[in-house]
Image 1 (cartoon, chains in turn blue, orange):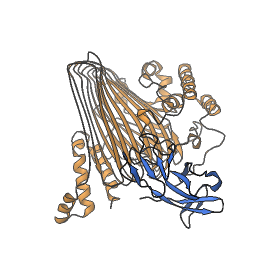
Image 2: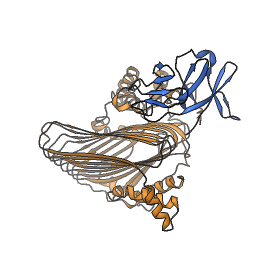
Image 3: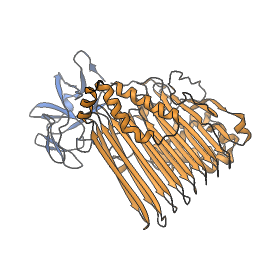
Image 4: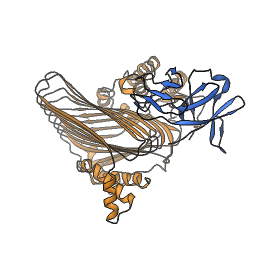
Length: 110
Length: 440
């Protein structure tokens, strides 16, 4: 796995792997994230539903939101905010950098 | 942190690796056949489905079996730096040390050997005490339960066997230490058999070479507590913070027998423990104490079952967890009462103390009762540390850290009061203090 320690950005995927409005789950530095391209911009959130602690990666997109496949909670891909019940807290949103055809993310802890 | 584990690329947990493993072993034919059956189960069972209730809250995506290699019995193992915590001030009747799942040292006071006590390497005992072991080995853990149980039943490397004959009382405890090197594997199995009227105390602890060590532990534990016998069993899990820990633990408790089982877990990156106590004889009694302390991104899951199959049995499970940082615990407790198991008295409780906004504790108690004259109760609490208590303690001259240590110690006091072995209480107190020291 490629990582850039000087800026703490880690390689997540190739830009060409991202299809518009299709979520892409990835493992980055032993953590799991979901990437998505919305209106030509790439966003990345933690692959954890704050309602039950399970994965969001299999969920579908609804506009700018990712829907949890188990109980229907929605998370804004741009900010990580929880948009509807049963989730009441947002999930982590990570900064994204594009370098050529590569997508890098900076994983947050809190 | 990304963990890189060096391993011999030519040997893995695959068909070729299994055949090489069988080739290296000196096992009786019945063991080899049992291993082959379990390997077939391993090959046919898929990884646990994340939609199954027991695995619903467990994220296995980060676990990659291909990163690990089976321990090679022909190579010497040395994990000298793994700490031992339960031995301070304890005089033991015997001790056993395992390194990467292989026994490297075993001792038993000849006084007990003369009384017929058998204690030592499981691999050795399946050869030297075949009939004793055969009756109980993997009798309680079904290797088809899941892929980890099947792998463990197929490729257990060693472990320990304790047999205490009828009416023999072991006044001093036995101590077992399982040590694992960075990036290594421990597939050990433990079997304890107490015959009628006997008594024993077992202290079983596990630790890694360094606090940050990676590794893979897939273990099995079977306790057979015969009629009117008494077993005190203590387990302290302190694997390194990058270790994956899977275990199936079973106990059967006979007529008027007593089992006091204490489990403490502070280590590992991820743990999934399936613990079941079966009360099979009239008047059987079991007390289970659980202490969990998690930090960073640790994830510990305990699925517990207390199964009442006979009348007049008592079970009492108490699990307490303290969580820091972004750690997570999942506790699922189930009291099952079979038809006809009247006069059952079952109790289960799980309390969680959260030291951080981002920690998460899932507590799921349950009852399944098929008898109509029983008393079964359960309870669960989860909450944050009361800032007013900390403020009060600080106003009396304590630092914030001292105040939190007092509150956490008080939270665990109910369990400490149920532990009758001083060294275990001291070791748990020290482990908790170590964890709290890192809290700000």
